[in-house]
Amino acid sequence: MSKPKMEKRLLEMRAADGGDDQSMIIEGRAICYNSPQTYTYGDYSYTEVIQQGALDKTDMKDVPLRYNHNDSFLIMARTRNKSLELIKDDKGLMIRAELLDTQSNRDVYQAIKEGLLDKMSFAFTSRADTDLWEQQGDETKRTITDIEKLYDVSVVDVPFYDDTSIYARSFEKLESWKESLLDEQRAFEVRKRKLELIAKLKERN
Image (cartoon, rainbow, N blue to C red; front, side):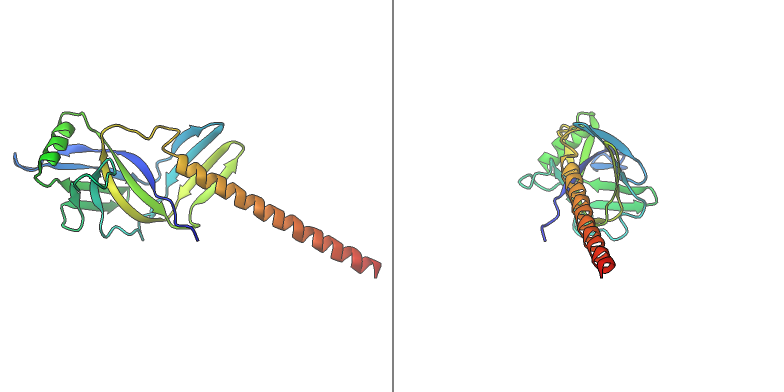
């Protein structure tokens, strides 16, 4: 069984009032329930929505705050040492992070305060075979019902996932789903022909 591919999504973030001049705190809503987003990809129209409760069983035990999802960049905060807080509510997921006092974090935080950085991304996988797909012509809707693991949240300097590339992973899933439907249809046709053949043989006898 192949390992599910990690997907990334954009979100908003801002600098928050830390209560003193030394704290570097950022916060934002990482995941929004029941908030459909529609994109186009070639001839397709694709709508994705995260169902309320999709985070109920999500693995969020050790989530880092990164810069551009970069493993080589010093981690900015982390749930493990409680510098990153993930807050689930009935609307989705909020994040609040107190950045560690490093030069790189000070540079990033200053850019956030000045409005040069205002986007984040989060990386996740959904649990196998739990997404709900609906197809009407060239319009497809994907409902994510069960996020299996949250890998990281990340400050990004530019929204480098545009409307076509950000959902490339989703359209790979779409093509896989459509292929599985075709396989089911083929199997149904084979069973149907077998039953028809059996019925004809019974009539002859």
